[in-house]
Amino acid sequence: MDQALVGMCVNERRFVKIPPNLAYGSEGVSGVIPPNSVLHFDVLLMDIWNSEDQVQIHTYFKPSSCPRTIQVSDFVRYHYNGTFLDGTLFDSSHNRMKTYDTYVGIGWLIPGMDKGLLGMCVGERRVITVPPFLAYGEDGDGKDIPGQASLVFDVALLDLHNPKDGISIENKVIPEHCERQSQSGDFLRYHYNGTLLDGTFFDSSYSRNRTFDTYIGQGYVIAGMDEGLLGVCIGEKRRIVVPPHLGYGEEGRGNIPGSAVLVFDIHVIDFHNPSDSISITSHYKPPDCSVLSKKGDFLKYHYNASLLDGTLLDSTWNLGKTYNIVLGSGQVVLGMDMGLREMCVGEKRTVIIPPHLGYGEAGADGEVPGSAVLVFDIELLELVAGLPEGYMFIWNQEVSPNLFEEIDKDGNGEVILEEFSEYIHAQVASGRGKLAPGFDAKMIVKNMFTNQDRNADGKVTAEEFKLKDQEAKHDEL
Image 1 (cartoon, rainbow, N blue to C red):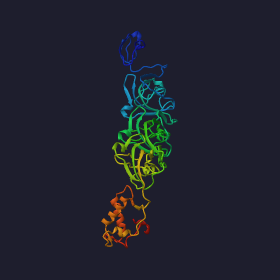
Image 2: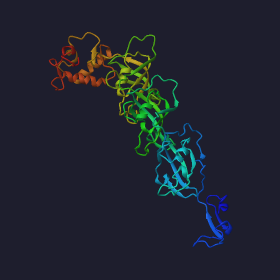
Image 3: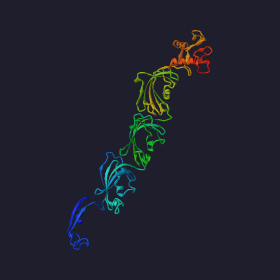
Image 4: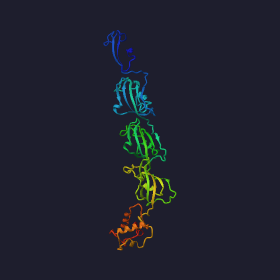
């Protein structure tokens, strides 16, 4: 039999005929094998090993990029099929639909696997053959693995990290101009793709068609992202690799398995700090820039409005008409109102407006995203000086002492709206009076009349009629 087994392969089957002189001879085996018996054996070889054997490794796939390999004390997540040398399956993580997660090189595995996993890359596939004395030895595992069994593990490595790992930042693409970098307490808007180390996708802001918006450095996101988003520029792209103890830990979350390393490819769209005010950069001022815009002035201007990443939101140049407002009247967002002040006709400037001075968390439906920083490139084309605060009409000349009589053309001692309106518009046309620019002139005059008509009977008498400076406050004329 010693001679017959030499040269056999696992799973080879042989029919062996042994003459008596190479078997039990003339003695036989009492009660079992008669003397001088020829023996016939039908042999199927299941397993083979040698006491000098070591772990055998066959790598049949290795990714082109292998920045890191398994070292002693690393924590790994892998799938495997476990078979005997004859191919009989005894265990599979695939069947359980769950990776095998363990430390390597510290005795949590059989010695052969502790050795066989060293040096693997994420994404690598290898076959590890373990002799029994580096596996479960003479006794087996008491369940599925018999004693003296060589084991074959077909392993696919999905993930690895070390408990001492911090985050890593890779593939940074920094814009040419980076005037400001994010700090703790800033509010960021960014896009991301989230994958596991083996490339398995788990989440994307792009698929939701909106940015992920959050404060950084204050615990609103996982610790690894809190750290990885510090020091970014607007428009920057970077890859942030987060070990599980700075991610979702042993428990995982949703479709993120426990103890998973996370990879975030991010693109920073904008950021600001709640303490930010507007930023004004003047690009051109005409030689004569003595008349500056102030509250109450009527302005006509052109603008391009965009996000910090350059996305165009709106443009009056494209529409072919100016945008017209009364400064300080609440007709534009507060940041724009601030940015248009102390500006002269012909001046060009860029105004950057943080969201709390713009459209806030809600944004403008269909136009401006929530919490967006806005950039306005402005050119002031026309400025009409406003009236003193609280006035909608002023006299440019001395007021006639017989003002009521001049308005009361028919001399009946009563002024109706038509008479009042005709008179005021005539004063404006002649330059003797001025209405507040940028407002509905008819509405101003009607309000002036209503203020004088103290008993609301539709007419003003001489007793009711008073000039502005004769009033306690805020009555016209």
